[in-house]
Amino acid sequence: MSFRPALLIIDLQNDFLPGGSLAVPNGEEVIKPILELLPQFPVVVATKDYHPPQHISFASVHNQEAFTLKDLPNPEDETQTKSHTLWPDHCVQATHGCEFPEEFLKKVDIINDADFKPNTSSVSSNTTEKKPTNVVLVKKGYLPDREYYSAFADVWGLHQTELETFLKDNDITDLFIVGLSMDYCVKFTAIDAVKRGFKATVVQEATRAMGKKEDAAMELLTNGVEMISLEKLNEI
Ligand code: VGL
Ligand code: ZN
Image 1 (tube, rainbow, N blue to C red):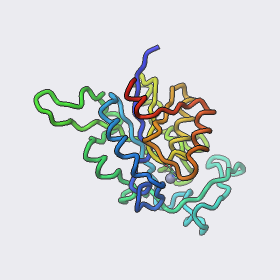
Image 2: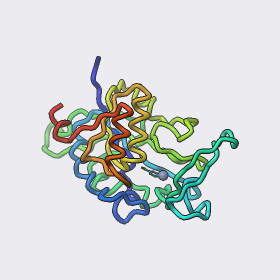
Image 3: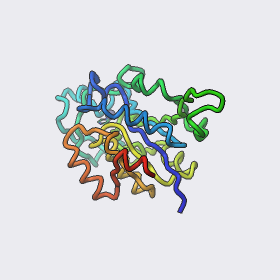
């Protein structure tokens, strides 16, 4: 079996960082380890939660308090519903909250999947200056009538993003998953990755949870996702 890893950075966006509308406690602590990991991967993908202003997951749309629950319908079959957590407005397209943090943007070139070329070396041949890492952007959450937690598809499994096709086209076998938040988009993306035939590993120092990280870790492990420390990852 070949080993072709990719780094998958989930929702490293201002709204999930301090001062953001859905800030994850200590979320800023993931930035440094993620910047350290960037030059180590030939393929790097970063996702964006990318909501329109009236997204169905926003409490404001339902005149409800944030963090309460509501049954929301399957967009293709209104007789089916699922309980959803309603969120403060967050990651609205074209707002600061939707952007990647400056420290990250300084180190990367954001490209779309069609323009992707693997990163070779992070150090260019004739200078010691670091080249930016090419990072493929995958957006999710832009259809207004459905929630997305996994970066592969909406919660109903109806609309698939380009993520799986991109990874398979590039022969990726192993995903190292980092970013925010460990109990929502990181967790659901990692579990979905295993279901789609990838080996999925979450890097401990490079993710933070909204709630209890032990609960998220347990759920990851029981669903076939591995966890690794930065130190151990650097030995691979
Ligand atoms: C997320 C809640 C709502 C996440 C996104 O990125 O974990 N959580 N939208
Ligand atoms: Zn969201």
